[in-house]
Image 1: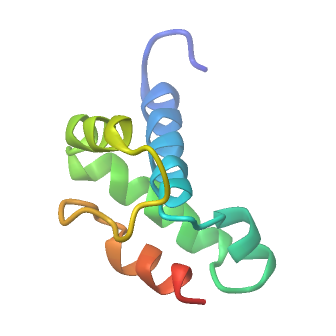
Image 2: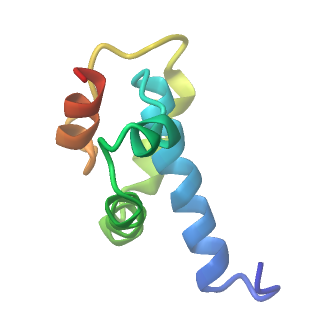
Length: 89
């Protein structure tokens, strides 16, 4: 944390949103990297895309409503294609 609510805090929030979206989809991003299905660079790009997407509020609301593994990623999710691909692996 940078103590000033700056870039590190925002990046951390989007890291957790990305990870949470994957978890709700039944995808373990760390395992996907271990299996060579996702590179660390791709994971970093996912977090950056989430941060640039400006849809964190709608993502948080969607995540809060989930009670189990979601059948598919929501239409607004910038990671929908990646998560659907990883889920099918």
